Image 1 (cartoon, one colour):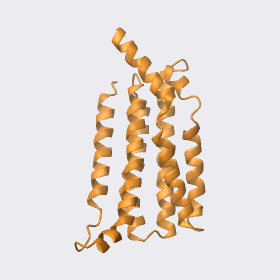
Image 2 (tube, one colour):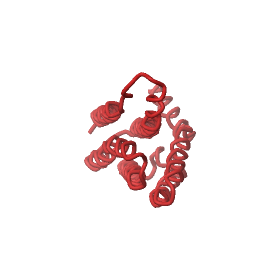
Image 3 (cartoon, one colour):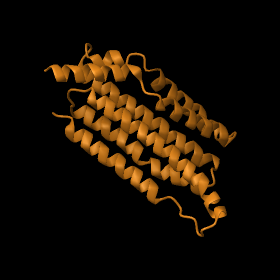
Image 4 (spheres, one colour):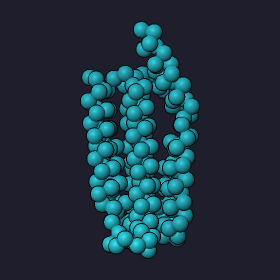
Length: 199
């Protein structure tokens, strides 16, 4: 089974999710700077959610680029990930429309942690399919960010009931942490591209 259809479908779903999120942005009711200022919180949450979706798209692309094959378990693991990512517009809009009340901020973290778990499951299924000697397994052996992120989300969820600023700060921190490219994966791609060129 080839991976091209899986990649194309996933790209389309993430693109649609981003489009839905943009369409849900509230347009200011007049043309004053005050009206724009009132829209800034919604724009900020949209930007944060966009960054998270972009991170998942990039990591998903890199993971599939380094994969040689997919199977039924990988397909379902991928659908599981896309399900949680498809909820990002919902929790983004809820958090904005509630004026950042504790429960929507916490639920935003629940969706993020479940998406992170789903990505881990997808990654695990790909590693199983490629066997113990796969180059990808060595590249992902010390996935510190992948282990730290769910932990920070788990702290952020109950912290929303203390102060939302802790939760929002942790969400932003995780996003910034993932914006730094992973040198292990980058070096693996160079090897794969070199092997492809040689053959």
